[in-house]
Image: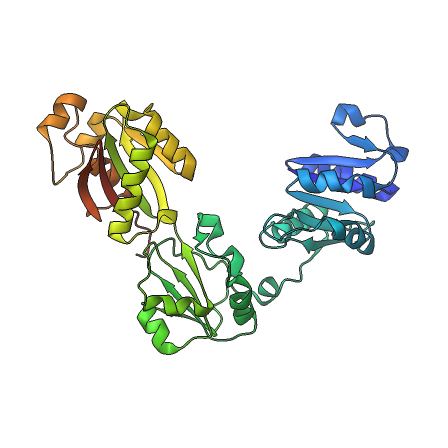
Length: 360
């Protein structure tokens, strides 16, 4: 949700336009320019200095669109700033609606994208000053974000970003995940080079690196992270069967131990898949909720259409399917071969697949 705030006569007109055109926008303006239809349109009026209103808006909305002079905005938001990972996007529009300026949280907060969107609606000029946008290169803090990729650590985001925009040698190694991450209609900048493996990248001695993999790195490979960012794409699919009433703790323990054995990252799990008999299995649901994983279930008929290596007559007698974890993982991932066909541990059976993307 966005808050659009105006304090001048012309600003109110712009704010009202945005309130009608921008999805999720709540309009606020000073009551001295009330037009009488505010309640009907859901517009919020305030009295007094806008400085008093900003702290609550700053804490409530994901983005603020302020039709106020840039200098005044900078002074008002300065005491409210905490961290670029949590501060809302702040966008400023001049009183004539000619320029839309990205002021705060351009990347992580989405201010740059919001600036472009608002400028398009107003037929105004977007003003964006972040170096990666201006140079049309990789925004390290946004790399893969639209696909759900997550960082292993944000410790090196700033120095690696500096290497990218200062045109130093930056290596990219991608072992898994979506391949269509380059969004510009120009070639990849010459300073950014793709390598087939971490070993090959290390041999080239880059100034910085971006590594995309679901694997846990070996001690030797970790050298790439001295000035590198490790991204975890969502590619691991867990097929799980369990006895009725199995606790979330047991299921979670089996998942963590299994991924450690495979040397896979928990952060790369995309989905948990099972049979429809387990769609209300509280332990499974609790684990999926805890980690924000997709929870998918299939009918016995759907599972039986998948060729599996270890069919079980016992499982068929109880469920109507010749397997649960193995075919469920294959069905969701589209993988012909599994990273782990099937492992039984206590009350839990687990299979592990890797989701394949185009180009892999």
